[in-house]
Image (cartoon, rainbow, N blue to C red; front, side, top):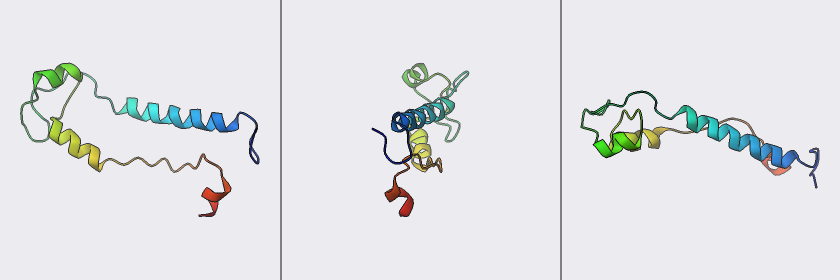
Length: 88
């Protein structure tokens, strides 16, 4: 059953679009190419196990963790379409 102005499959379409966008974003952030033996930020050696696990790795664990803390994602699209989300 659709709510308001959406057709019956509208909500599911919105969910699938949001998931698809998140997958595209995650894939775009994956490293590629040859990895480094030393961190591009701090210069510390990157352990062999990390280089084997993540192709194209460029950062050590500590620098990668710091980078992920700083990264925020905001799409700017309100796909929920509920009146409550639009009135706030």
